[in-house]
Length: 381
Ligand SMILES: [Ca+2]
Image 1 (cartoon, rainbow, N blue to C red):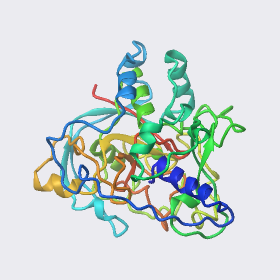
Image 2 (cartoon, rainbow, N blue to C red):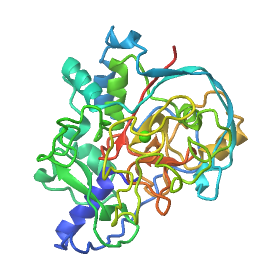
Image 3 (cartoon, rainbow, N blue to C red):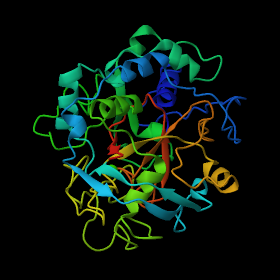
Image 4 (cartoon, rainbow, N blue to C red):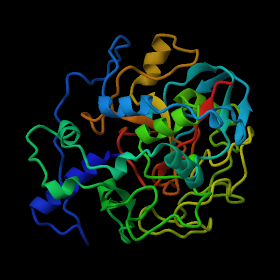
């Protein structure tokens, strides 16, 4: 997934060159310089980096709520075990290989994605403001853009987030054609200031960044799952299968998840009944009693994304409770460190990302909020 700053950059250049974003956007080639600190090699001794110290300090200061942190309701116990982590069919991408023997300990996991009601309780208790509700930090922005990029005007730094907008016609495969930076779009206004979440308390919270998910997890006395825990949980006890429900195509039989039917991104047939988000647990759970492990919203994991993590794990025999690489590398956006997101969203279909496969990996920068990305938490005991 492209970070908000790349989409921002794309739109910004449209502004500079006075090209109209609609009906046809001009494609701008972003020249990505090599960053010597980010590469295909994984340095396990690399110091912790990338995260905003200011936000980390703020999140660390959030104390677990005494009631929430002892409350196991809404969670399911998952007995640890061994599995083969990685791609199971020909849709699997290069970064899902090689398959790696993996062991995870017992843990508890939220049965559903974190909902608007749950997130609202956290905000009410702590006064926390999501990243999408804050002014864009000019320093952070410039650090993620190629050198020489002119600074944007002040008004472009107002709070905003990425909203899906169907181009209603076939377009090149570039997310900048269907993601739009919308001012004042946030978790309470998923499509912008005119929209609301009234009556949608049981929908997954969206427009939350990885930082926001961490902040919530701290308050709830939980944590984000590792990528390995997430995949193990998603498999629901079915070994070597493609989806949480087994191997039957997502397009066959009863509707199994909230995903995109039709031609992405311009023709949504809506045969699952949901054009965008669905209330959590609208479809059957997997073998562990977990809902929406496929589709609805992408879910942030704790780990950094690195395209070469699986070969690295195999080579170094990293089997037990892997918690991700020390550094991040996304060949699609070399200068932007990314966190793992898993499970696909209402925008996924077989012709595009097939993100609802249990092995499918996706990545998003820690500060990016999107209309199709949320999270769920885990707890050790
Ligand atoms: Ca999901």
